[in-house]
Image (cartoon, rainbow, N blue to C red; front, side):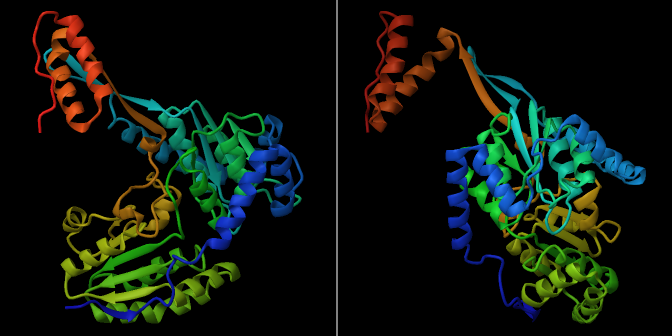
Length: 435
């Protein structure tokens, strides 16, 4: 049975970004050429802010004093959850040493990246949780220096809760500069910080493009597009909760796709009937975003059975994937392509977005088909090493010489030849290339 679309998206998240690409390229080139002077000019233009960029300890303390204790407690709770999960993740990577052949030893080391730049969005919404997710994970990985860059509000500066979260999670420097100029400042090492080796964190299309353009010169977590979410639901799902969860993700932005995949048409129709009312009940900005996302990007798909549902989900490779269906263990073992998985009605994407412990910086636009989200592993380099005795390297040298000559790489072959000649004088080796 073919998928039956009760609602089909009029648009996709992959829009023409040529203007964004050109704008970002121009800004990056200018900032690299003129440094802090250019960065400050763009901050004044785009952030409409000309205050202090580098927050002092006194400014951090003053901002923290503005955060209500209840919110501080919630930030610390979320930080602790993210920290403990990151520590468990780090425990899955170990330095190893293995004797491949007698006398030939190879190993692996996990080395933290030295300098991390964490971008924290603060435009449409104040993403306090992004400070928690990025800084905490980099700190657990062992990064030597962590910078946070976030957009200040005109005449006000950085959001106090973002400042507090970044500080308690371990940021070494907090900068009131957003957008492309914030990303560039971290990449180029402006404002008395080391050049970032990796830049992570969500952001708008200009931030995403700046990271993409800089990738290769610096590492990045991933090339991100608009956030997206998919719900798999069977006839036992609660239609009100399903509809609420769809709307909760649609509020991210006008171009944030949400998808419902089910094998029960009455549930799909019930959910579709509920969504407009739930959207209408949101505050103004949230409502505008959710209305546009639901109208232009949302899809509702009816499948024949759960296997077709799972196959559909894997094809979409959503950033967030929720299962509200029976036999959760079957879904856990069957599903293969997602950024983060939420099993059962008792959990929701919102938990992962804010406080449950898994990271909310995740692959979008189908990238979950080949990569996972931000984790402690993104801040660590897995490198290899080897050593050998002369006898242990003997067979390797012979194989290297012959393979190199078959490839036409005579210089490689001779690097093996000279060792065989030095270590085993008088022995005859057949090191010629034979097709």
